[in-house]
Image 1 (cartoon, rainbow, N blue to C red):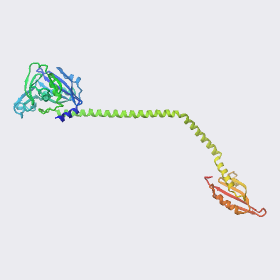
Image 2: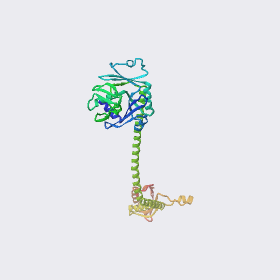
Image 3: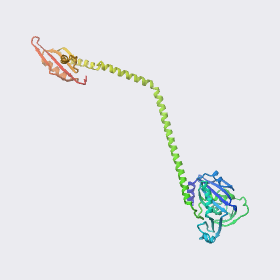
Amino acid sequence: MFEQLINKLKSTKKIGGVAIHILPSGEWEWGLCILENKNNVVDIVDFKQYTTSLDHLQKNLSADTPLFLCIDGKGILHKKQTDRHFTLQQMLPHAKSEEFYLQKYISESSFFASIIRKDHLHEILDQFEQLGFHVNQVSLGPFCIDTLIPLLDQPTEALEAQYYQVEINQHGILNLDKSLHEPSNQTYRIADTSINNEMLFAYASALAHFVPNDNILMQSWQGQERASKSWKAKRQYQLSLRVGLMAIFSLLLINFLVYSLLFNRHKTLKVNYEEHAVQIKQLENIKKEIQQNEILLNALNWQQSVQIATIADQLALCMPVSINLEELQVYPQDMARWKKEKQIVFDHGIIIIRGHCKQPLYLQKWTVRLKKMAWVDYIDTPQYQYQDADQKGSFELKIHLKKRIKV
């Protein structure tokens, strides 16, 4: 029982208990008691007594609040039984089970039967359904106060409520005495809560959600299971919708935080960029000047001129003293093409050296040294002619340079 109570406290926040008394005229007197679970403690939020229609119910409760009804008065019959296994026909010999709902109250001390016509109960439930409320449980007569008996702070032999004097003991309800006079302003202490006798039935009805009572066995009414499933599906949909909205809100919040972070970062980078914009522009201008200078130097063949000058220096350094240099042609004119096409064309990659030496051995040794130079591709066979009159020989070397000169 206590485990069920804890589960109920965790699952539901607000409950409505409605006590309806049907007057002989057919009009209602009804009371509303609202209980709320606050940190696993059930507190009374509000209690109101009405003699008008159920329109006031919508002003005090939301439609998703489950309701527990206690119905009594015109159209409801109670009768004490001697056997716990009583039937409807024992109470009304000619009654048809398809026309009545039967409620059994069975305790260790007494047995009571309560009946109501099915169409009568359906009319009552329809009024709540039209207002959008779901009725979880219905009890007939004053038997709902059986739930309060174990919770009374001070034991008593009778409870005085509207229209009833209820004789009780520790096991439950013993007898019912319909009271025609107005009840006194009696107050009962139940679990440190003061309960006026006017709100006794409504309070007990709502408390039945948190404290189930096995002594009251009410026959299930038509459409109860369907309505219960529909209400649960509605609650599940509302819960899913709230979870979905919370998820969307969380996602939007995360997106906003990320956007704010990136925006601030972008703002910082923009400020830094603007601070260095002048330096960046100056750097771009310098790059343009360098590109223009490179174009100019390439047009003037500056790099190649530097390389040829270096080659000439290396030729002079490695030339033996026994060799006299007379002529050095770098990229000489192609005379064959000049004679044939009358065009001035230079042989790029060619160096022609003319001079004289007394012995061809000196020229051969120098040629060997030249072939080892990094910028030499190959050397044509030297042309050497010895002249007896001058006692010396003239020579001509044709050096072919590599395409990529490394000096």
